[in-house]
Length: 114
Length: 115
Image 1 (cartoon, rainbow over the protein chains, first blue to last red):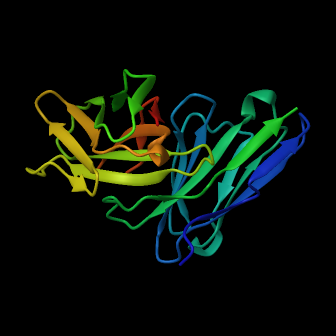
Image 2 (image 1 turned 45 degrees about the horizontal axis):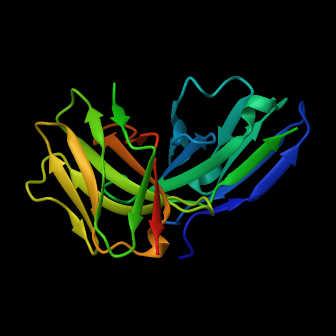
């Protein structure tokens, strides 16, 4: 098992463009989380999947954001009509249902909107 | 609502010394978990140590130990015999043990180990 994989590692996009990030969790982990981390801050929760079901979304997740996890495997996070305020590190984590000490994070995708 | 407070924006320590990173939390729930993560400049979040709210013993993992004082709602991380590779951002986080079990993070402490 190679851990949680996120692609791309870096993304530079022009304001107004759409971007999509991918997360491949640890295969036996049924829970998947997306977080956003801005410079100098701790990560903030965006959304959570249990298998293919998206069970919780933060108020931070505006209408321009959408996340999917088809078939309960990999997940994608799409941002439409990007704004400069979307510039951040987007982190994906996966865990087993019991969660105890079992969160594994990917290396993140750093988004820069110019 | 959960809240994590890390009051030390930066810490500077000499190599081989022990260091304590402070973390206080606020919750009205009785069932929760506390975590410490290390984030080097490369960006990944590395799990260090976990303490459950019902655990009676303080958690230890190698050079890391968690000083858990439930009544004071504090969960300080102690790193013994610091090494140059310990230089990184350190985040305290908590989760409820029910529901989504999402992590709530503090603002972090930047630890610098001097040779």
